[in-house]
Image (tube, rainbow, N blue to C red; front, side, top):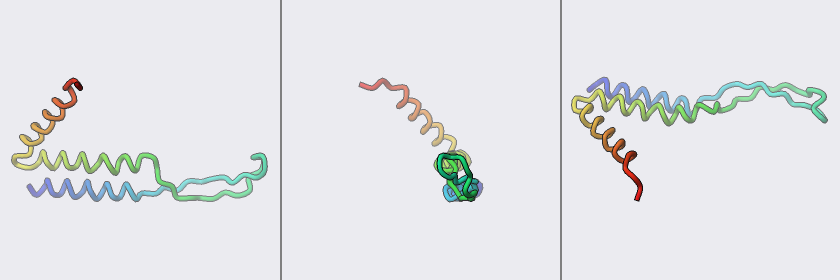
Amino acid sequence: MYWAGVVLGASLVAGIWLYTYRAWETRLIRGQHDLVVVDVIEVRIHPWWAVLGAYVLPLIGAGVSLWLLPEGRRLFERFVSRVAAGLSAKPS
């Protein structure tokens, strides 16, 4: 039970870190008609994968922590079977 909380907490912290993560990128500022490089600057940007990871990682952590609970495997299997049944049902 203790490990379920550790996994959930670690995945939430990692998700927050990914959401706030910034990377350095070098950009060239060009002059008229892109002929001359006027200046080179470094800016901090948000990578495209950071937001995706920030949403997916806590979901995976919640699933793993649910799996680690004593009755969690049964709850996890019931949840997966309901989701699978909902996805396989034909829309009316």
